[in-house]
Image 1 (spheres, rainbow, N blue to C red):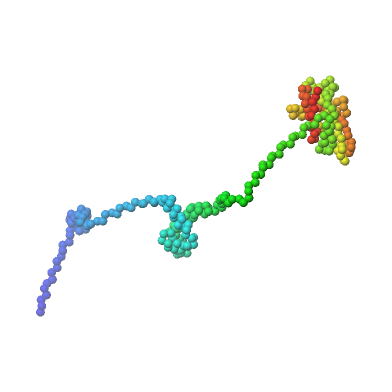
Image 2 (image 1 turned 180 degrees about the vertical axis):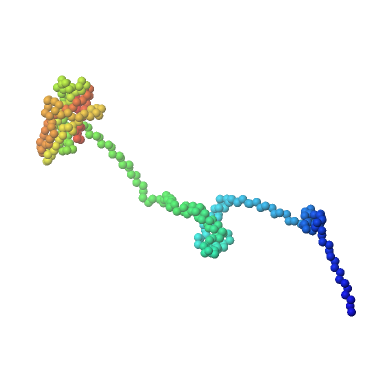
Length: 287
């Protein structure tokens, strides 16, 4: 028979939690010795922090570069579907999950450049080519016909204006009648009348109307008018004198004539006058 050896148990003593221990030896607290941990990490290599990347300002292109790009874009057909630099087909429209179509960023960028080129430089060349102006050069071929010296046409000289008629002349009127100024004189009764003005005189004229047409023609005495040297006009005064037979309104049969008088009140110092009726002007001077 075998004899069993007695078992021995070792019981570790439990820490006395009622006893105050130092913080670095208390198993209930973590090791807060920052200096010690720092010393342990001093030997570990650490990568330096990356340097901040400053944004690069966009480089402006010169007008020559823009013109070259515009020419390259204008030479590409609209339906070609090739890009400028890589000559790759422009990506087609992509369908997202919702079914709506959208362009890729590269396609939008190329489309924007193409529209700018067409509206800018391409439009300029198209407008320049469609002006429709033609330059006609003078012909240098010698003419087969000899030159003919054509004398200049002389300008027509102005016709002399007809001179006004005088006392005793017969004038054909626009109405068809013939007018004659028979005589002119100053009325002697007017100066003695109470209605006379000290700076005025009364001029009497005796006229004759004749009808040589085939139909009756009328006349109007109130249409007579005097005009002095200052182009001032004076209207006729009827029934103003007993020294003549008053000319009254009427008409003349073919071949008939009538004679009568008309008066005018004019300035005393005026001597030169024109008797006006329709298209007739008859000059006279008072003595």
